[in-house]
Length: 470
Image (cartoon, rainbow, N blue to C red; front, top):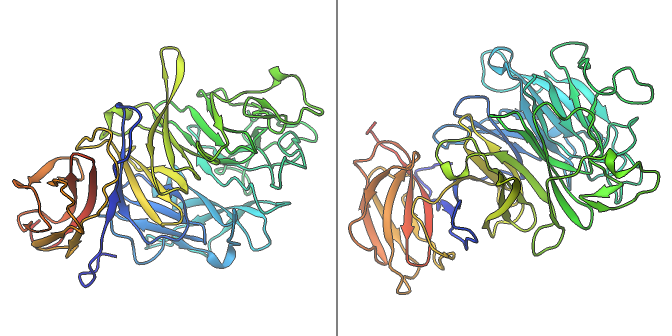
């Protein structure tokens, strides 16, 4: 990706209009060139694993390089298109010892398959021939597959499944506990063949109810996560026509909850035919209208527990696939407060992810780019996207770097260089002109960010320094 022969423009972030002064965020591009990325995971080191819906899992190393060989490629087993494909990845808590990873994908017949793969001995890649199938769930329609899976604080594997698709849940799968569709499953992958049922699952030994079920009444839970500090569970469930919803389940309180679909959509009545009383259901802490001006498909995220963005600590960061809006949810003064952090032009925010240190990322589905979320290092008041993005070449660079502006348009550009820890390593003493040459030979090898600030906004571009200085 970082070829010396190709001048690459790393469009790494914009500044946009902020509705709130605190907290605020911006996006830094860390890698590009992915095809339909839908999940981001880590294994406790400095790598990020990017799930491509076509059936591959790519790896970004700690220097931002994309590995030449995918971690796993099962594209020949995957039915890709629409909401089908390779949709989720979870690493076993003891991955360093057993090399197990678990995936959720649509097989060639259109069914959902939950499988385990194992890292090939002596390598850092999974063996595509090591598949152990745990579950196969027939899908009556091509949409609402869910797709996320995560290991919970108890070491059990949680699996989110949509209601099977079409519109309005014609099978009433969300409320039919003889079906796995429309549910959150919970299984023990360390025991049984190929798994065991945890003894405290809510429907163990009950007739006509699948014992794998942990929670019910979901429509299309596109991404869920556990708070690494508190073990609380967050589920974002995509709405039908009127409400997108976010569900919060305090640690240890999820057993047997019913989120209400198809009786309710968010907090609104949807189809009450045959439904029990309202007190039987667990309602979301936040909803927003399913309209284009706000959003039409919620994408679940994570509670921020990193160190680089202290204003975000404890905030649940999530977004919308269609509108490109990113929000935070936080409990303040005895109520849940929702703030819009950013509205971006990317649209199609397909997933969020966190690294081993709790820093947050998101994927732009159509662009195939991965961005890191961070607080602005150079602030901007009511900033807007700059009209002209600087061109930087060569990038990577060993020493001399040329910065060229398409048009300065009487805008005064200030330039600073930051390392990945947010520390300033260089401030350009003068305003940059149409063409500026910068000597970076004194910088150590690695990744940096060039931050251009004007009175109307800031943008950042990724810079890779190569050479002998270590």
